[in-house]
Length: 242
Image (tube, rainbow, N blue to C red; front, top):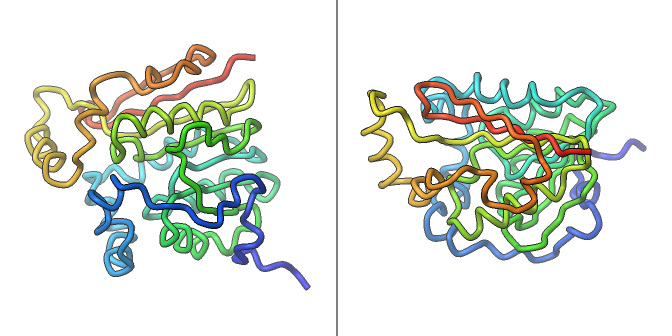
């Protein structure tokens, strides 16, 4: 009998097979409505909603991130993403590659498993990447962090960046896509300031320093940063030396 790729037993990578993963306090406090409530999940996890949240840039941002990886690679995705991002990554690495998706919320893990059930190269499990020293693996060809860092406090953000850098093999690549401080002339800058104050309490602190500065491991990487849509979004790509 062929194994069922949706079987949770097939999605546990050994040392991170945590039986009880506590939901971080910041997530319960700020984002319970968005990531821990199945009622809002059904509404938010729609391509049209994701596109609207990102001002029509969702498809572009997702495809630009996915293009940084190659077929046959072993890739880690940090946190589940609403919309079709995980499916795009699974398609990109292909049947000869592997995609591991990690999220701290059981609801998000179950939802991602549902979306990736048809991809035998994909597996999803629950773990907290903001725990210091939580090294998923150190042999990934690629790591992708798509719109996660603006949703966590600075201390957790630093630990996540450090853990993700530790997961990249020599010669491998890490990609961060997230918000960026928009240009002063951007017509949406005051709107986004209101959005951040109302719905994204940790976003403004992301702009205080470059993402790579959050971990001393960044010294072992070559970095390239690009912005788009008037500076509102950034893509940071790091290639590990060696």
